[in-house]
Amino acid sequence: MDKPKHHILVCASFRAQGTPQGICHKKESLSLIPYIESELSDRGMTDVTVSATGCLNLCEKGPVLVVYPENFWYGEVDGEEKIDEILDALEEGEACEAHLIS
Image (cartoon, rainbow, N blue to C red):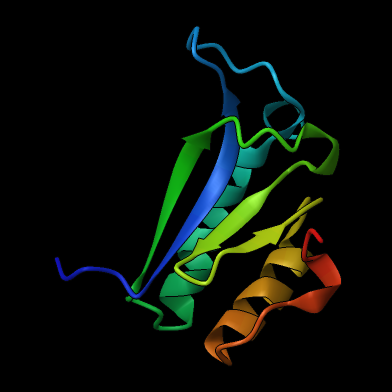
C-alpha cells in the first residue's frame, strides 16, 4: 500500500484506561467509519485512509473528524449528509467551511 494522500481520523472517545467515555462514542462515531469507507470507495478516492482515534478532547463538538495533512477539524459530524459534504470538499482540495471547528 502506498502512503495515503489524506488521513481521516474519527474520534472514538477512548481514554487512557481503554474505555470509551466521551460524547463521540455515545453519538456512535464508530458507525460512521463504514459509511466513510464505502463512500471513499464509491468515489474512487483510494488515496485516503480512515482510522478511529482516542479521545480528541473536543467532546462538546462531537462526533469529531480530523483530516490530515490539511489539519481540518470537523465537529458535530453526525450523519451521512455531513460526511458527503466533507468528502465533496476534500475532492475539491478545500475545507468544508460549514462543519469546521473554529
